[in-house]
Length: 412
Image (cartoon, rainbow, N blue to C red; front, top):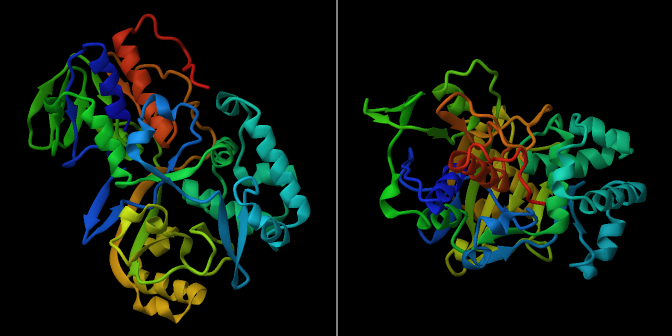
């Protein structure tokens, strides 16, 4: 996404460029497969409309967004408990107040935290001091029960970090996103985002199935040995790949996930298709979603698509992963789960980088890596759709107008 965003800025300013893409389609890790009428995103993903500048980069209307309900269903002590935004789900006020997910004091503190975040520009969050999220929540006075049953699966769903050692800045901006916008799915899958960006570029400007093996000043070498000369090079890849291409002597720790997809002729026993969080400590599943109940095109008529997200390295490569997920789902939803048809499992070892402090400020223009080489995307910014698009646009503008480039991005 960062590379496509950079390319679009160059195209708008009449600068010639070539995009080298390893796979057969645009979008990097945000892609969608089609399988017997199902749309399977590579890992459960959503588009957050609460990003303050997302409409500067994407035509949201053309993506035909389908929105998740504003809340979650938390599996806690063998029951589902709805915690929903009363502004959008007034019928869930009682269940939200009466749920055993933390105390009344926890909910009051959560409202205060959300209020403090929505009243300030997003940019301000990245100027605040940062610390591990678990320390930040304890300093706010949240109970251990609320942290464990709500914040841990929520944060892990967004950052794949069950240890809660990720930056408090990340928790703040993710919380702000969920409070000011919707989690949504494009009608034609998350892969539609990359296709929309690619469609704004000249048809011959993207070369697919072109794996890069090394980068040096003035030249890019492909896996087949082909060398391509370039006056300027922008590296827009994942953190581990960036370190490899540029031979960076830096520690790289990635967070992995597995997404297990099932087909079911079934409706979940919750009033709306809320994202389901595991509020306990049993089983490999962190969260479950029902994409086709939000965006009907994700499944053929009469079928429900179930997406179960598994975290923890020891779980991802288990020989019995599907069976473990099915067993946990049966404990939650009943024996009918045994009739679910397994569609596909995506195991993504390098889904996101570790976001422990210190983190980068995505609003700050990074310095060039070296003369003739720039980096954009998660290595020089933060992982996330808006940050990728913003980082790529900054890189493009720095090439178009290197002298006049300002030190900060002005999106609020």
